[in-house]
Amino acid sequence: MHLGTLQRKTKNTTKKVVGRGGTRGKTSGRGHKGQNARAGNSTRPAVRDMIKKLPKLRGYRFSSPRKPACEVNLSDLNLAFSDGEKVTFETLIQKSLVPRQAMTLGVKILGRGELSKKLVIEGCTASASARQKIEALGGSFA
Image 1 (spheres, helix red, strand yellow):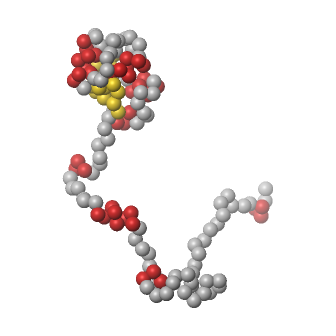
Image 2 (cartoon, one colour):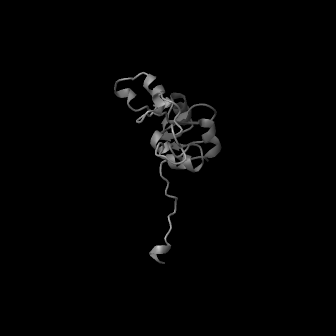
Image 3 (cartoon, helix red, strand yellow):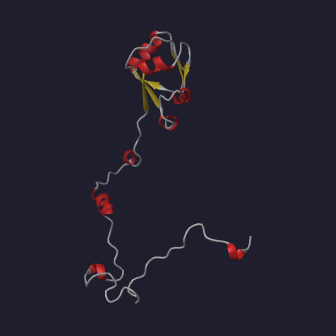
């Protein structure tokens, strides 16, 4: 390998400069007069105008929106787990019941559906009805 044979991976591009002679003469593609024909003109993006129109909500609770926990129904647990098995973030992710984000968002077990198995639940919150159904079958929360 010689230094003279090296080539760029991507092409070196430069911004097209208008109004310096060459193929674009006279108004250099800027039309006639007006704000857009002047030097230093840069129109503000429409997205920025939309952002500026949104109300500014002050206070701590608006600074970072709280994401809801991933929800799992008892009927899903009944199909995926066997009797006496542990329910954790890792097992729920392995069985594709919750996305990988569940580690940061948290998991909440809801009482929809029927449960016929004794389960040990770790690191998950549960609704009152789900907790009642799980404990009625001899399951526990760790």
